[in-house]
Length: 83
Image (cartoon, rainbow, N blue to C red; front, top):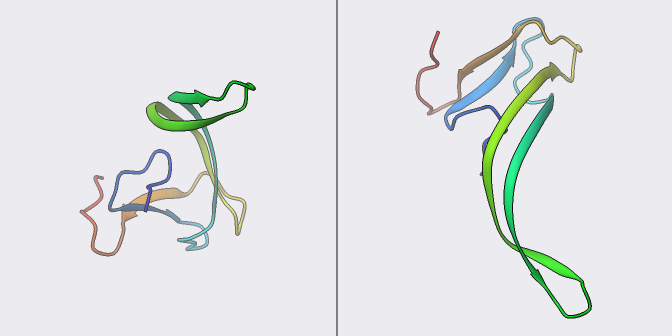
């Protein structure tokens, strides 16, 4: 499973205001490199994609709408969160 933008594996967000652990709106900017395979008619598919940079603009709790109490905490079985 892929980690959300801005989170390391073994970490998750928690809303300190309402306790939500599962539903967040995340605004991010991603810079990616894609290898496109084009057919002769101009249609194409992405054969490979590499994420070069991810910048998280904001994380907002979907339940209470708060963005000022979002914490990064360890996920079950994950590493301890840095203070």
